[in-house]
Image (cartoon, rainbow, N blue to C red; front, side, top):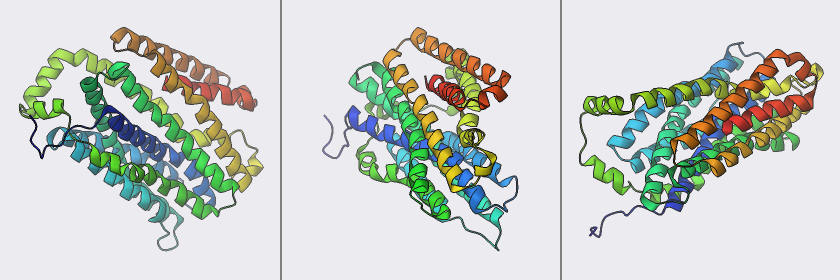
Length: 355
C-alpha cells in the first residue's frame, strides 16, 4: 500500500494533455521563426547577410543538446523534474526572444545575434520536450491500457505539432492585418510561444513519475552496460529508426524553417517587404500548414501497435513525399507560375510528411 505522502501517477488524460500542449508549443517555437524573419528583414534591413541563417539554425543546435542532456536527466532525476525544467527554459527564453533583443550600438545585426543566442537556449528546452513527452505518454498509455495503445497515444501527442505550426502564421497574420507596428509584431509572435507552457503549468505540476519508471530506477545499471545490451538487442532497429528520422528531418525542418521564403516566391517583387506582402505571406503559409494538418489525423486513424502497420505508413508517406519533391524540383519554374498548383503540391508534401 502506498504511503500517505506518496504522489500517485495522474490519469492518462492529464498526461496526454500536458504532453500534447508541450508539443504544440514546441512546433510553434521552432517554426514561428520562418514567418518572423520575413518581418525582421523589413524592420532591420541593414543586418548582415548571414544573420538570418544564424537565427534560423541556432535553435536546432540547442535541440540536440536538450535531447541529450534533458533526456538523460529524465532517467536520472525523474520524468517530472526534467519535464518542469524543460518547461521553465522554454518560458524564459521564449519571452526573452520576444522582448530581449535590441540594437547594440545602432547595429541591425546585433538584434539577430542576440535573438540567435536566446533561441539557442530555447532549443535546449524544446529538445528536452521531445523525448520526455514521448516517454511520459508511452508509459502512461502502457499503464492504463489507453484505447488504441501506445502508438495511437504517441501519434495523438505528435499531432499537436501541426496545430502549433498553424498557430504561428495565424497569429502573425492577425497582427499584420490589424495594423500593429512591425517591430511589435515579431516580438509578440515570438513571446506568444511561452503562453501554452504557462497555461498548462498546473497540469505539469500534477504529474509524477510513472510506476514503471519508479520500479526501473531501483535497478539502475552502469550506462556502458545498459547501452551494450540495448545495442545487441535492438541495434538494427535503432539504426533504421534513427537513420530514417535523421534523413526525414533534413527535409522536414528545412521546409518548415524556410516555408515563408518559398511562399514569398509567389508574390510580385514589388510587394516584397511591404505590409501587404507580409500579410499575403502569412496567409498563404497558414493555408499550407492547414493542408498538412490532416496528415496527422490520418496517421492516428490508421496506426496500430504492430511493426507492419507502422512500417507501411512510414514507407507510404516517404514515397509520396519523394514523388512530390521530385516533381517540384523538375518543373519548379512552371509550378511557381501557378500559385494554386504550388500550394497544393507544397501543402501536400507537409500532409504526407505528417502522415
